[in-house]
Length: 196
Image (tube, rainbow, N blue to C red; front, top):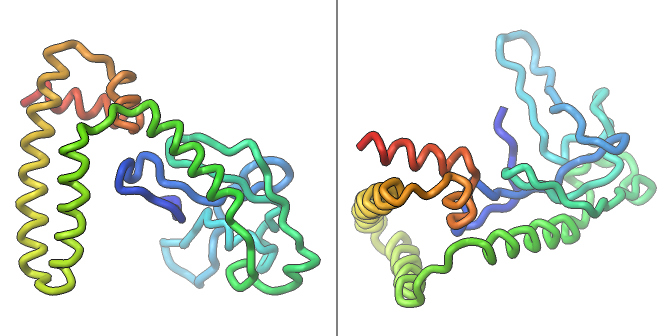
């Protein structure tokens, strides 16, 4: 079951997607399932807003920041059910600024450990993002074509760089830290580079 992430960055993509995680009884509860009648597929979610105690679902006691990499924030943010009342959590004015700030601090640590991009390349990427966004609004087909070209260029450069890392016998842990990704993704990158 995919997790519904609330926050995401271009820098780290899915490897460090973040969300407000739920605590019930001091631990993270199981996913919430929705009864939609008969059928083989039963929809479920771990999104914080589903844990409101309705329809026999668990009621969240507190929220904390969570990250796709497995990191969990230490700070807990209790939910004030007297203020929330009987309304569903998705309708309540729940303050997510604490978990968001904790996840952002976690990303700062990841970013500080990651290999920095050379300044000319970082500036070029930022300019390219701006041009692509503007083109997507003005000329969507041209933007799609440009995105395809960039994907192919990036894939080729990525394969070349990954092969160079394999030749240098760089560990998956070192690659994961430098890229700000998970060890399993770094290991996959290195294995596929060796096979090409």
